[in-house]
Length: 474
Image (cartoon, rainbow, N blue to C red):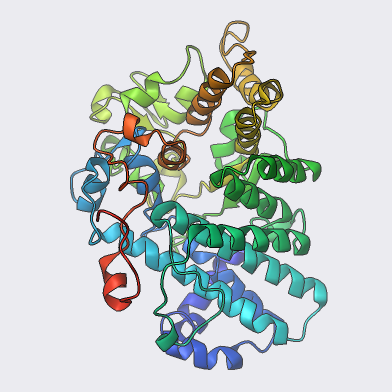
């Protein structure tokens, strides 16, 4: 994936000046730019750039997922008013982080559409054309999935349009989901199951199947969730890592548990993970902008080793120091996606990747789908796989995390939801889970049912496009 990062930087610094930064030129020049296979690859590599949690991107997806949830509070020094608004549910159409996120996702979508529109006309091997097409379809699907999580209905654009045709209305979410599912199915047919060497980190067949499964999950199409999780498992290349921590360490990334992993690198070139600075305690050269809540820490069962792997508490190791309650206003700080300060050249250029889809999450999708179909006994199997891995790392595996053997649907539903919280804590899922389960109003102070299920569309976009209708109650 490092080759992807380098190509991104080259393209953004040169060719991309005429493709992304100036929309009319992008449309006029696309035909002259896309001449060779290498041109197509450079354009494709640039489509990965908006994924990054980098200072250049200002990607605050993490804030929507975590600070607005019950896992984190803002912390920090108050210098980012938008983050404070997330925690208090006072965000508005003028909150800057929402505007930045909208533009970032549509930058990625535009780049994917440029590739998809032009690659058919380039002379290259069919296998390479298929791979490039599959990657662009997957990436576009991923960007649209994030947009629907955050904003609900958004304009669906599946080809490059001239500026005077871009003022289109919002597309129903069901239509966007159908596009994602169709594109992911097609991408899975075109993509390889795995890559090697410098190509590791590109989207794969398994990632496409998994994103389709997640989309079906949000639609509550439980049979399809099971069908597509089975497709992922049938590839025979994914499994749980014996050590839970290996999913969050530099030297054990892109492992057997990683289904879709967004790559970062400490190159001092804008491709590092800025969470390493934004989430770290101010006592450890960070900004402390996501402090773990007491409620989150207390959600873990006794002797669950995942707690200390996720959030640090009093007198526990915190990289090269011993953690103290004064390190945050809650007495707890995030550990995931952070690393020792002497392991990176710049604090904001961390090289711990963000794994957007882990195999353990896929198992929990399967458990959730079986539960909602009232096939509770079948839900026990994938749930136990996740718990057994954690249990094996406990100080007393004989007593920790007992198997869930209930056959009662509601009891199993509660167990699966609990497991998602503790297994996937601070992996940018919690707020969206609470919303899709329909329980955010009972869990989150300040949440208004009928309003906060989605965030407001940026006012700047509505000003530019009068056909856009603001989300209800904003």
